[in-house]
Amino acid sequence: MNGITLALDGNRISDELQSGHRLAKPELCNPLIFSWLLKCWEIKPEDRPTFAEAKDFFRSQIAQNWKNEYENVL
Image 1: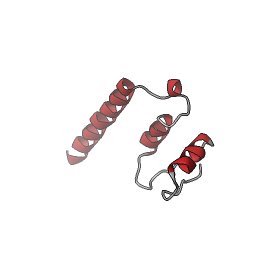
Image 2: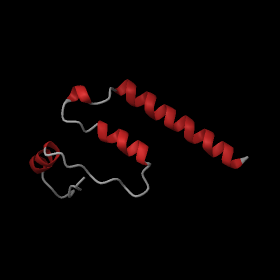
Image 3: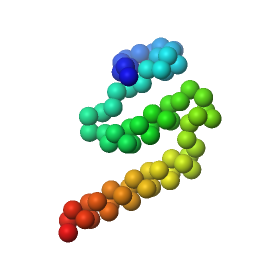
Image 4: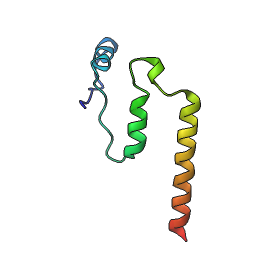
């Protein structure tokens, strides 16, 4: 996966995305969340998750994170 320089103009960014290039995963980004976010960048809209699916995914991740944090406190 190649990174895209943020200084590119809009046309170049579009070309890079259509070529399959995506920004690299930030160092502190959860790999599961990053892999899910990549689904949002699919070229065909029908291959992307819906907003309802996104809401459900992130709601479950937040709930799991809160549970883990709570258990770590105990």
